[in-house]
Length: 381
Ligand code: DGY
Image 1 (cartoon, protein in one colour):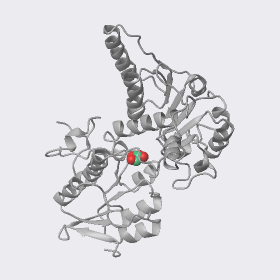
Image 2 (cartoon, rainbow, N blue to C red):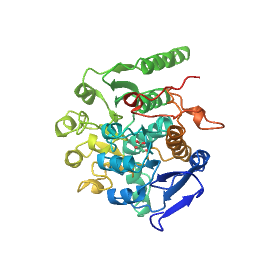
Image 3 (tube, rainbow, N blue to C red):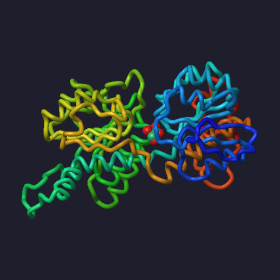
Image 4 (tube, protein in one colour):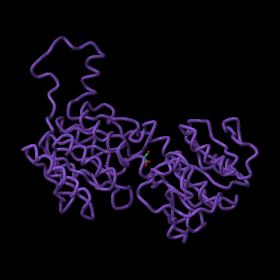
């Protein structure tokens, strides 16, 4: 153990795995202990520096579970490789903090945690949408500061969303789940932008329209926009669900904000740098009826100057996946990735990861993003 801020579990384990933050639940630990690992967990809530991580890796380390707040670059994968490590897993579905190419060059499989965040993160996007539309945070502050003197016809007027257009940029798992919540739960019309048509989303909305039809109610629509700009011009709500890479960095910039409706709501639960945050601050200042709901920030944990002074912005600290079930599930999958690779198991290929969450898990690593590049074997039932 490196310092008093590292707790050790199963000291007799033959393999050494480091975990750079404490994780919720116990199943993740049981999985690692079951794979004969001595597990060292950093108990500090401080974000570790690269030097601290290198020192924790030390001379001998078989695997590691790291966090999205840590820059897993060539230097750290080099340190893992020199220490004899065979596996790394991010405790996140997103892995923009990981240099997967370097990991692959060092022969290290990289795991992530898909499938357990989908509905949870989509629910947070819904929560931010309605908080922004109905000015929940402003109203809460108004109450707490004793300013409420009685009901008034024009107090905190917001936006009715039913029947309007919800724009979804990135129609992967989370984006599609959000689109369905807003269409099926709230009868908004879906306009999505993605590089590829989402047949699954369109089919599900079509099936829902069959149900609406049986009730004699008006159907909702689901269309794919030709361009991001088309979507921004038409949508009343725009929710971002892309990965962060060179093509999506500052996807929402000053020019594109200028295309959005005066009363539009912009929601971001994916990655902060997808929005040019300085441009957003300027836009929200100039357009008080425009609203934003943000779970993620460009320079997290910092916010761009002025953001926290804006009444038309709802801000929460990257808690999109923060439910007990999801965070425990993420631990299970991250531990399953490391233990699976250390045990020499093949890699799970199915989208449905639920078999890992209860009972005896399959003898597979649940999600390894560079499995193909490393030529890892594939799990077959
Ligand atoms: C992720 O997993 O990528 C989220 O941002 C954190 O849960």
